[in-house]
Length: 112
Image (cartoon, rainbow, N blue to C red; front, side, top):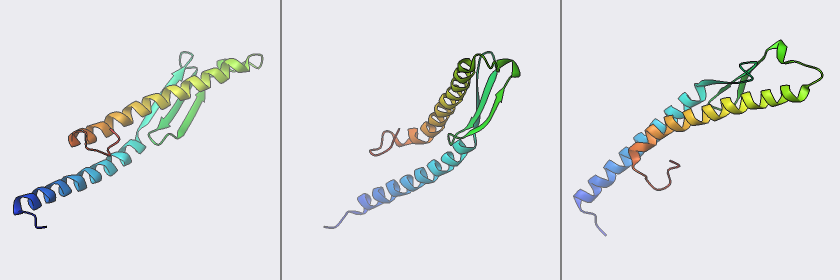
């Protein structure tokens, strides 16, 4: 089965667009991994910093948050701060990836 010249040209154009999209996605994934987001709890008594690769980079705890008689509150503050940072990092990641994927117009197999 022979393809008409116009069909072959369209296939080449689609292939080039897909290759560019793949390169753009890889670039954005690298950028996402580099972002740093802070989340806090208890009026900044606990501050967690994460990156776009879902790694906890730092955790700061105000000494006033440390009460040996109430460890559960400190645990809750730590979880809240880390979860806040992770949720913000996820949202930023989805936003950045969506900007690249948006150009594909709902291409099958794309996660966005």
